[in-house]
Image (cartoon, rainbow, N blue to C red):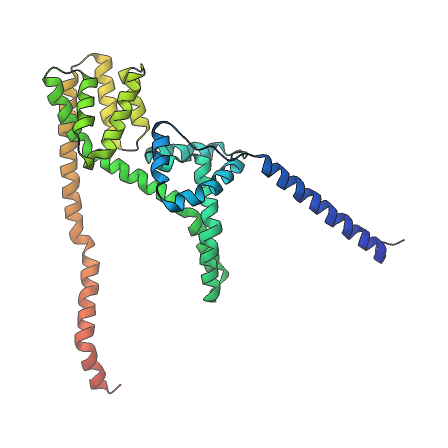
Length: 302
């Protein structure tokens, strides 16, 4: 009997279909056994998750990306998880997300927003390259959001840190110790310094749990990508190790940060004129076109 026999071909086709169905059943069964990733309940991540649940979109999408995160957790992505965990920490534990949940959000955005954008591109009869770009952009959106939050939080810390250090110097000059000065700063800083209050509050929590001052401040440096905060942490830790007065260290750091911020503001002001050249040139060209365009058209008889 040759392999081209119709009965043998039908038998092979049936075996292939049954094998595919069994493989699909095993895959679905294994995926169904994986529980969804549990949400954080305590600490800063728990508070962030409670705040995120006030948004209707997050509440609707949380069960889906939690299950996706459970499946992604079975993959070996050690380096990716390490990088994303550090990025989320720099963003202030945005929405209490973990690295697997962020990857799940990427997949979810690719499947939902990418499908909607791909449908619009198909309706506009554009090419496959445009559709692929839309899918990749949709998958990239959650990562861009976390990265933007990390940069914004670093800027807020750099702006608030000199004020916080000045208050610490005043309190310590009046006889308070460093934890009491930090407590006063956390209580008295306004809503505009929310990021600084949160970070210093975490330092106080670490001190209350028995951590040393160097350990608590080192964790502060690891939680942010701000260069100014890391320099502040390094100077305070060095002051602790050498036994130099902490008030003098804080005063010098506060003055240095204010000077650096002034220099940065002057640099941005000097760059503003150069950056405004192109918009001004386009504006002048548009005005000339509006004024002389009709004259040119009427003169040429077009």
